[in-house]
Amino acid sequence: MSMSAQSPAVGVSLKNLLPRARFFGADDIHVTSCSNHSLSCQPGDLFVAMLGAEHDGHDHIAAAITQGARAILAEQWIPSGDIPFCIVEDSREALGHVCHALAGHPAERVPVIGVTGTNGKTTTSCLIASILHEAGQLPAVAGTLGYCDGRRTMPAPLTTPPAPLLADWLARSEARGATHAVLEVSSHALAQRRTAGFEIDVACVTNVRRDHLDFHGTLANYKAAKARLFSQLREGGVAVLNLDDAACREFLPTLQGPVLTYGMNSDAEVTATVIERHRSEQTFLLTIGSDTVPVRTAIIGDHHVSNCLAAATVGLVYGIDISTIVRGIERITTMPGRLERIECGQPFSAFVDYAHTPDALEQVLGTLRQVCTGRLICVFGAGGDRDRAKRPLMGRAVEKAADLAIVTDDNPRREKPTTIASQILRGFKRPGSVVVIHDRTTAIQTALAAAEPGDCVLVAGKGHESVQIVGTRRYEFDDRDVVRQWLYATDADWATMPVLRRAA
Image 1 (cartoon, one colour):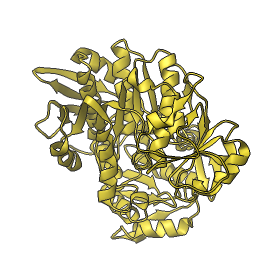
Image 2: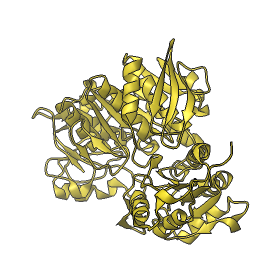
Image 3: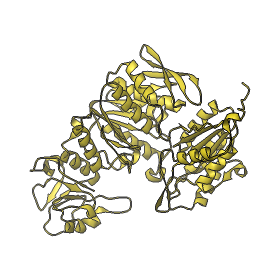
């Protein structure tokens, strides 16, 4: 991945930018562009050699030089002729600093709001952007759903862009007049230093539950990665924490700067009380200080109320009044793959959700149980080449909450689907009651065909995703399309079918 210079022709001085670096073959190195991939290295680039999970960039220095690299930034000096070297302790960290310097340090002029957490990052980021928009601002947003610079949206290969793309996104956002940049920050990005090189204005943590232990190893490492977001807060920057979450409460005494808190069941600055919930909407009372106002949202669940509180608290940081905050929240009528309701006139409810952790499944199923008058049917699976230990926990969560469980393939990747399914089944006390259908289309159709009036079908795990990864190949696949196609294709006359209602 290459990045062109946004700096003056003289370029960026690595000696000034990285004062603790050591130089070989030169007293200083001035660069106008950089690359961290040897095959995309262009003549004149600084090649940044990084240690990856599967490859070591130091092994590709010779190839980068052949491609035209004029200097090397690395963690160790490797004899390579007379090409100058800049040696640093962490080349990933250094890459971020170089990229943002080449882009002209846009984060110094466009305040960055970083949102991290196991669940809720995407929805919270979109809610924050909506509140800012309602307040007359022009927010840029980067995350799972895409990288929007305030005007144009690009596909998102990763939740948080790598450093070159991140710096470029911020620079484009500034050029297009963005007033704020809302950034979803994954634990992988924090551990891999993708966000190095700039400071953030607000650090918002939605929650920290069990996830990605295949990458982080332990829950402690995972929490430590999330906590790195606070280290990027500018002087006077504000931390926004969910007091309902145990990990967020643990972070609280470690923070030195300003903190604002929110929660539904805690003594926080921003709170809420749900007063009404249906399958198509819910209403809650939002309280900020002495002000309390009702909020009606088409997205249901306590977890969504919590996301609304996080966004409202960020709005409070910027002095946005409560009525504007409410309008911003209510502007979001649907979130792709986040308890997205599929309505085709059928006498039962159908939802598609991104829930792919035990905690997320428990929350979503708990919400649907409150609005479901009949049976709760759940179609779910687990991703291959990911945390195996959470699979039985997912099965346990579904067995506790659902009346019928159908286990299917998620993104099996390079794992055997039968192995993944068997590990999920270990979490069930009654595995014989579980239906296993590996073909995801058939599994979804089976759930829909089994649904009776008043039932609720949840298709969980992939949410907004439009592909399924099997082996190393990617196939077009969207849970929402499968649900809609079956509902539209069925011959049932929904209007004449009775709706079953459970006695109060």
